[in-house]
Length: 181
Length: 238
Image 1: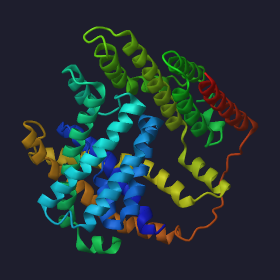
Image 2: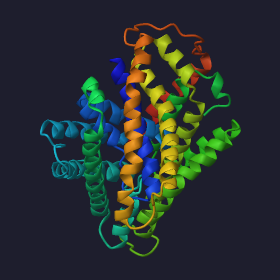
Image 3: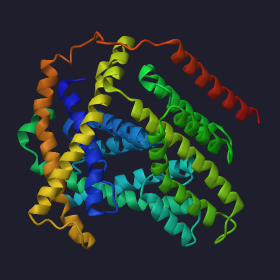
Image 4: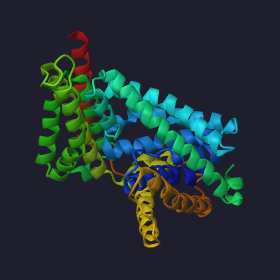
């Protein structure tokens, strides 16, 4: 593993963790905790993104509970899909970034819903549970409530993540981007 | 997880936390997981680790409330009333949450980065991966602190963090961009520092003060393995 990658991965994971603080400050109903993962994919490749995603989930697991490792495959999936989006110039314009973000959110949300329902019985340590509870109270079945809540929050979240990363790429000093890629 | 975690091998708290996680899913509900949670709490209290028990309960509080609402109140079959089967699911899953979260909090408390790196060096495992784990654990709180400073600075410049969703979304770039761009700008310095320490070429490190793997560590590992295997066998034969 190169020195640059050893320097990039902890910072990218730390960005994911710090986004939790930013979102709390603004009271936004999203997570944005994959900005570091997507950025790592764009700066150093899909494998770097997978390492950032899985390691980030391990850090969350150490803070919240070891069971959160169950979502590690979803983090890896997001990194792979971000790599595909990058290959298809998915960050070329805000519109393309939003489209790819929504598509990635759809897939990641569906995957998260399966894990959330079968491993956690619909209750995880995140705000998506509040949406699922409201839907359940409105009369929907538990699997449907969990699926809709998970997909809905993930589509909004990943669309925002891809838009922010696309804007960050334009703001990034070209010297830094060149050295990493 | 122990009476004196500092004397245990750095890998032993991981073994304990993983064993508690496995048992939480293997023991049948509704009573198995709550009993396991009670056992974890008693062991920690006996070891003077009341702080871990308290923080574990605080972290589990929100999931407990949601479990009670989702399964106990809005449970299948008896909508609007306390469903017996829903409450049983909530109790079992709540016990799982409590046991795993509390064991994880105790693990994090016992985690010592330098002892962990030494233990990895003794085993001859990849130093790069161990470094990534430890460096990330140290970088995350630092960046959160920086995010706090940036938020305060932007607030002093008139940034409004409350109001409609649109206004709060507009406040996102002034908080995110300085944080992320500042972190990326750090990369060169950090990579240089790692390179100057020849981290890339390190094959075998010499540990400074390795912690021995004592008989107590071996006994805990064997007890954990026996408990997990016995629970799995019992579950399969039931």
